[in-house]
Amino acid sequence: MSALPDTWHAKLELSFSRQASGKTVLSRRRHEGPLLVQKALYPEGPAVCHVTILHPPSGIAGGDELTIEVQVDPGAHALVTTPGATRWYKANGKGSIQHTHIRIATGARLDWLPQENIFFEQADATVHNHIYMTNGGAAIGWEISQLGRVDKTTHWDEGRVMLASTLYLNGTPIWLECGELPAEGLLRHCETGLAGFPVLATLWAFGAELSDEQTEDLARQLPWTASLRAGVTHMRQADQQGLTLVRVLGEHAQDVRRLFTQLWMHLRPMLLQTPAAPPRLWNT
Image (tube, rainbow, N blue to C red; front, side, top):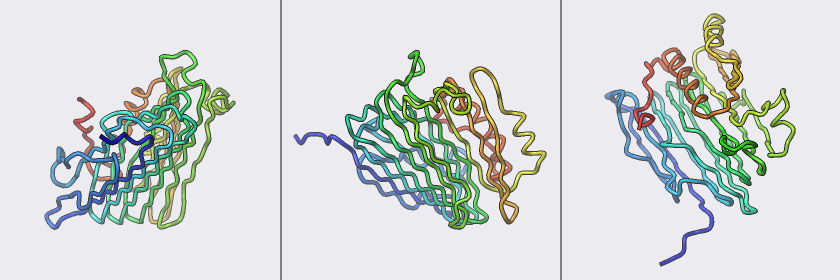
C-alpha cells in the first residue's frame, strides 16, 4: 500500500449553465486531488442549483495548496456552500494556500456561502479570493475567519494568516483588500484593528444599486455590542449597480454566521430577485 502524501494539491472547477427550460445545471465538474462536490440539489426548484464543496481530508495542513474555480453562465443561478468549517492546521515549516476564483456572467446570479475558516496554532495560511463580475451579474458572498480556539484564553499565540480579496467589474478592480495577521502583531489587539476579537468577517454583495433608505435600513440591523461589532459600506457603480460590504468582528463564529444569514435573507430578494431560504444542510 502506498503512503499518503505529506501535502495535498487539489483543484476543483465548476460551471453552471441555464437550460432552455429555465433550469440551472452543474454543466462542468472537474477535480484533481481531494476537492469534490456532492450531487446537485434543487430545494428551491429548478431555477437555483445548490452544491456543497467537500474537502475529504477535513483540514488544510502546511504545504497544502487548494484552488477553486467557479463559473456562472448567463441566466444561471447557483448556491455554493460547505458542510462545515475549514480547519487550517500547524504549518510544520510550510505555508498553505487557497485560491478561489469566481466568475459571474451578465444575467448570472450566485450565492457564495461557505462556513468559516478556523486557523489553529502555528498555522501559516494564505486565503486569496478573486471575484470577477460583469455588468448585469449579481452575487452575494462572505468570508468568515476565526483565529485559534475561542475556548482558549489567548486563543491564538503563534501563527500567521494572510487574507486577500479582490472584486473586479468588467476587468477593473473596484474593491481590493489585503492584510497580514501575525499572531504577535499589534493589529490584533488595538482598537483600530481587531480589538482583541478572535473572529473577523466580510460579507460582499454586488448587484442593483441600493438607495440611501435601503442602506440605512441595512445599517440599522447591524449590532455594536461587547461581543459583536459590524459596519456597512455601499459603493455606487455605473449602470445603477452597487457593491455593499459588511465588516464584522465577533467573539463566536456562529454569531457572525447567524448575522450574515439574516443579512443575506434581507439582501437576496433585492439583489438576486429570489426569496431567501437557508440551505437545509445547515440544519443537520
